[in-house]
Length: 466
Image (tube, rainbow, N blue to C red; front, side):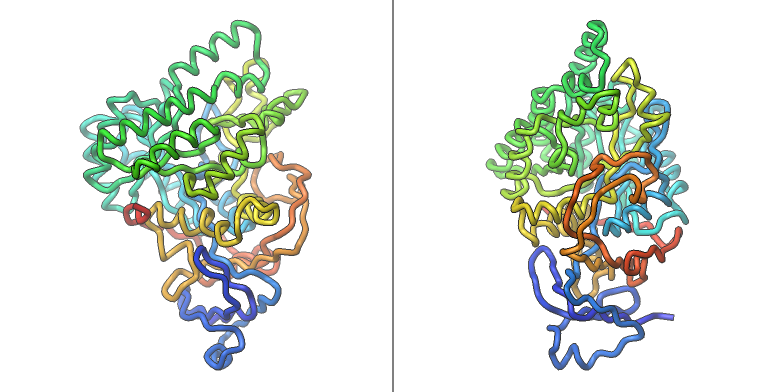
C-alpha cells in the first residue's frame, strides 16, 4: 500500500532555493511542491500530514565517506551497517557511501561481494559503495570497467599505509588512466606514507609514544606533497581527482592552485578538521588516542583555511570518514606505541548538526550547508537528483530540522556503537526532528521507527560534477 504523505508549513531549503512550501510525497518519491497556502497546496489530500511549522524541510544528508565494519590494525570498526546506518538516520543522513575493500592478492569482485554481504538486509537507510584498490594489476584494472557498469563508479587509492593499502605512483597512474577511460572517479588518500613510516620509526626510537606524536609525524608538508603529486599524476592521466579528508592549509592551497588552472580536481574535508585540533590529541592520560585519525588533526590555525576553502568551493564536500573504534579495548591497543592506535573517529551522527552550527557561527550560508552535505556529494558520486535535493521525482529522503532546539553532544545520548564522543559536551543549536527515507518514517519526532533492511543498495552513475 502506497501512503500519500504531505509535509506542510516548513521552510524548504535546498542547495539552490529557500521557499515556504508544502511537499507532497507519493510512492516513496517527491510528487510535487507548492507554495504554502496556495490553492494548489490547499487542494492536496493525503493519508498522513506532517506539520513542519517552524522547521526546515531539507534533503536527507549524503555522507560519501564511511567505514562500517572496516577491519583495521587487528580490530574492526565498532559500528555495523545496522548500528551505523541507524545512527546516520538519527543525524539526518539518509544515504551513505561506504568503502568495499580489495585485499592484496584478491579480486575486486571478492571484496565487493564481501561488503554486499555485510550490508544486505542490515541497513536502516540507503547505501552505495566505493571500491578501495589495494592491488593494481592488469586483472584488477579490467575489473574496474565491470564495477562501473554495476554502479560502483569510484575507486580509492592510498599513498599511505605501505604493506596494507599503499599503491606506488605507477599503479596510481594506471588506475587513473583506466578511470579516465571508463568514467570512474579516482579518490586519493594523499599522504606520503613511505616518508611517514620513517618518521614513525624515528619517533618511537626516541621514546615518543604518546598519541600526540601521531599528528607530529604525519606532517602537513607530507600531505601537501602527496596532494601535489596526485594532482600531477591525474593531469598526466587526463583524469579527474577527488582528494579525501583534506586537513591542512597547504593541501588546500595545492587544490586551489590546480582549480585555478581549470583542472577537474576536488576536495573533501571532515567535521573533525573543522571543529577539533591537535589540542585534542594532547589530552592527558591517553585520552588523546580518541582523536587519532589519518590524515591527523592539525593545529587550530588550519581551520580558517578549510572554512575559506568551503566558501570559495576549493573544497566541495564535507563527509565524516566515520570509522569508530571504542576507547576501551580498541584505541587502548596503542598504549605505549601511538602507531598501534586504530585510526578513525565516530561522526556519522554529528555531521549535519555541526554544519548547522557552522551556519549560525557565520562560516557558511544555509544553502551552502545543504550543498556541501547533500547536493554536491550526490552529484560528485552519481546519485543526483535521486538523492541530495527535494524536487519532483527525487527520492523522498527528507529531514524535518528544528533550527532552534538546543542539544549537548554526548556519548550518553548518541546512537553510534562507540563508547565516547569526539565532540563530548559541545553545546549546539539545531536538531533533527523527523526523517523520511524514500517516504517511510525512520525517525518520527525523535523516535526511531525504522528497521534494518529498509535501506537499499543504490547503483550510481558516473560523476555528475564535472
